[in-house]
Amino acid sequence: MDKTICERIIAICDAKIDKKGDGVGVSFYAFFENKNNNPEALFKVAKWWIKKEKLDHFEKAVKIKKLVKELDPYN
Image (cartoon, rainbow, N blue to C red; front, top):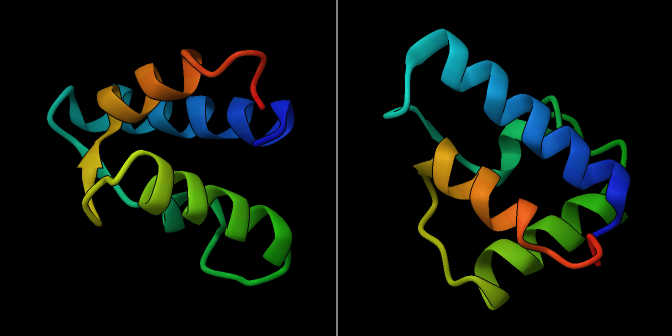
């Protein structure tokens, strides 16, 4: 994943955590405004989420934020 999408994921996770607390869940669709206007980025995030990390459909935002911050260098 590129740096731009990583920063977007972190910002969205932060906003959801601020609004609903540490227990809030997200899916990878949360980062794409329910539109398929950037299929390449959607595919990269889905591939990372499903194939690389083997995550469930919904995961805690704090967990996703931590995993994204560990990407080096936001590959």
